[in-house]
Figure 1 (cartoon, helix red, strand yellow):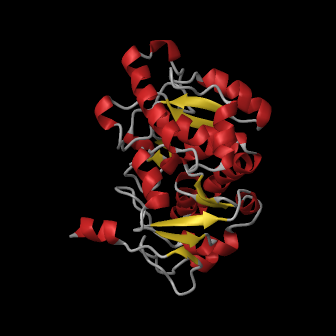
Figure 2: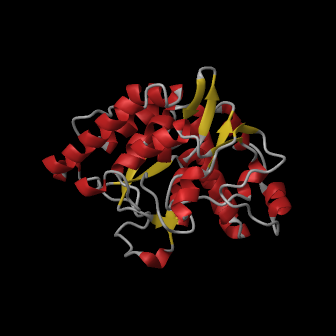
Length: 295
């Protein structure tokens, strides 16, 4: 599984859950010179594994974004070099944080085109699962997609929308949209379904499961449907939602979510593996993987 959290939202934590760092925005120096050869070695192992796996699986925007950035196998990337290129292309920069940050801090960074990335890397015995997002998940999984203008605008809009959703008390609904797009989204290309979500792209096992396994459902993305759908934070997803192209996310960045919040408020949530009669089903999964786990 990819790096993810056990909190109610996938990107933050309550302000009292961790010791506040010296800077009010929770940023810190990456400390690139302090990475050890062993830590660079973990990066190399993860990078090479995913780089072999993703051609023909990751979307074109991910592949081109990776090729245009100073992200390579030999060492953990320097956030300053990444930011130089991102700033020129889409106005984004990568800022180092100690790990999970409070939701309002996370949204504030995104709203100003700053992507908060964990500065640490997992241990060698955590290659396949880590609860807290590390530098591999955040940089390998997310940063290449920030080179795409549609994704760049969408994630900024998510930051603005997150601050608003907090005030309205509907953050759980918006968090599901992020989860099923930015983290675990699939896109339909002319040559087939492809990965654009960072949670899949940074995970060897989920990269295979999301596209190849007969178990999960692959459903056409619908905003209200996604807002009402719970997700898995402890295992592979039972359903993946598919967009037609990345510009569909750009359209989402420009709409008013308030009417959608009003329509779903008070409506029952759907379990992660539910398939509705109204769903546009691309692949009706067998559900066997999760059925066997529950047994």
